[in-house]
Amino acid sequence: LAAAQDVKKKAQPEPKTWMCRKGELLRHQGFPGAELSKDWHKGQGDWKVEDGALKGAEVPADKHHAYASRGVAEKNVILQFSFKLDGAGWLGGFFDGKEHVAALSIGGDGIRLRRMSGIGPTSKSTEIDSSKVKLDDRGWHTVVWEVYGDEMVAVVDDNAMVLAKAEGLSMERQHLELNTAGGASAYFKDVKVWKAEPDDKWPQKRAVLLQRLKKKPASLGYK
Image (cartoon, rainbow, N blue to C red; front, top):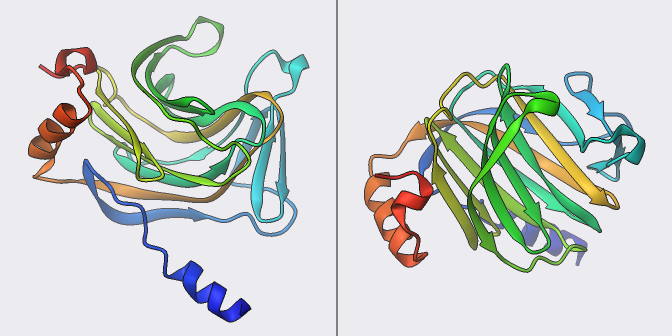
């Protein structure tokens, strides 16, 4: 029975991408053992490796969301990871350069994409798109976040989608940050990063998606 379950698990298809094609696999980060590998930087918060997953929690005394980061040199990437909110207010990721650039946040009520600027206390955040979806915070989910040039697309469980275009997203991006805040701990596992390759069919697919999602292109940065 256990062997049959393993086969079924391995047979699960990878979540699809929408805007880009997967290029070279740059990172595939599991979390074996008991310690986070040295190529990750623990910024703020309490971070532990537990049962094959990265567990993060905000520390109130920090007065800052919890984050852990690692270098990702490619500017155009596809990020995929599984997550469990487990009582946390939200979790997500940043792609940063010398300042914050692109941000994804996921909570029990939906997902959001934001354009960031600056860094530290003076940083600014502008929400571009959001999608309401009720997520089981005790269950595992998978998000695929595509960042290419000035556009972003994020999809949770091949279902809830957000997409956006914002001036300045294509500036230099140097590292990936996983983050969480509020409530209890959040969990991350099976983090994969691919180099994003352009999909020639994206303009046509985007038009169909905007119509299906009943989004106004101008509100998402499209002309």
